[in-house]
Image 1 (cartoon, rainbow, N blue to C red):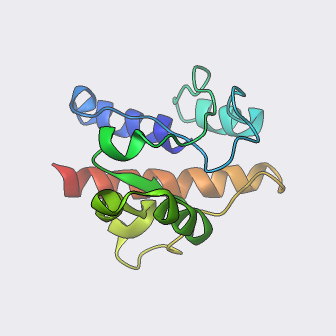
Image 2: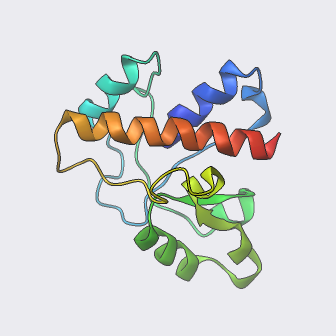
Length: 137
């Protein structure tokens, strides 16, 4: 969801072409699957289209191809930090770091909850995307 939301926020700011975005998980459980239908519906209600996104697993080359590797929570941060080559360790950080204490610090996984969990996560990701965009521009 974060990839689609950040792309939307950047496009609204007229900066969409400045970023190369991709999302990946630390495990291969959902590889090839689309975004959860509840997340797609919640995003679509905000004018954000997630239908083209498909899950994939983090690859070693991601640490050289991307300037930032953003984790949603502390567990994923630890996993990514362990995977990162030493020269790329500085690229790994939490997605909500730029909110500077204005949020929970981590994005919770809404998968096992109800629709309201996806709304909460979208709120956090939108706020985090705006804060990240402000720092990057």
